[in-house]
Image 1: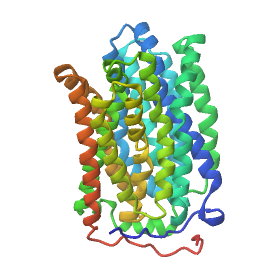
Image 2: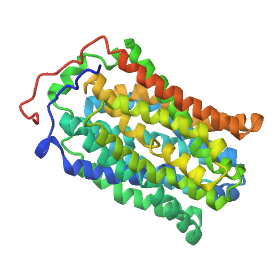
Image 3: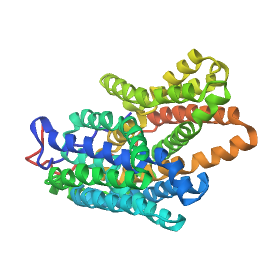
Image 4: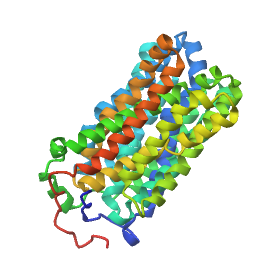
Length: 418
């Protein structure tokens, strides 16, 4: 059983309870921010580390550090989003992101590189999905939120497809430092004006601010919240492991590097298909049940991969089944939080859930590398399969643990959309 989402006063909501200008702006800014702050790194890694004369592990550690910083800041930034809205935070975050990328382009040693990625971690906590979703929740009527979240994640789902090859071309033409200067300019032009202009009048309504008296940390007394945390930690760890080690494992199964990379590329494309499928099924089934089923299927697909993955057809079949759930968490987490706890204190609750999941994403690939070195890649893939399966079953179990409190409804605002 899920608690119904509460209806709040919507600041500046558009027709039908949806600010289309805000949704369009956030779809663009999250795509560009993910592309520059996260996905571009893979195309920059090799030339950067050679120029700085550092090992791949040291270079990759910079991105891990940024993820850890972002995870630590999830809750305090969530509180600010609940209190003040996303206009100031996302505008400032986009400025910090641009400065950080410029600093990255000028790094001459490991200390300077890591300092730049501390700033990237701070900016990431202020401009990626969590703050964008908090703005959507603040300005969109409950019945339109899933559609709004889907619109943003569908566009941002192409960030890797756009920015990895784009960055590769820039590196080839200009070198990695000048490539970063171009990316910093793209980030500045595409995010700062949109955050400054489009996110005006997205501050939480008076009714929403008054509802802060019911502390979002009340969820820590809910056993179901801890099951959600376990489920998404396991799932995030599994996705991070597969994202980093899949191509290597496919080559060990006998595929050429080109074929392995092509097969791995299915995940990004299928994640968009999976998000659409989940949103359609949401019309008839609870998001928790849908997500649990999809994640469990991912576990089964990974478990079959060692046996079926020696052929291109078998590997493709497993990865198609796995890939349909690759992006499901992005839209499932906000929807499940809203279904279970309502929208009061949404950003803080999302931060409480996001902190351990981001920590898992940041640290799992390093732990996986140690496991692969010790036991081999097949046990690693089977461990990821087990994590997905347990995540799906744990998520399903939350359906039997309804929260022991009713989400607090603020006074209804006259500007509230129907």
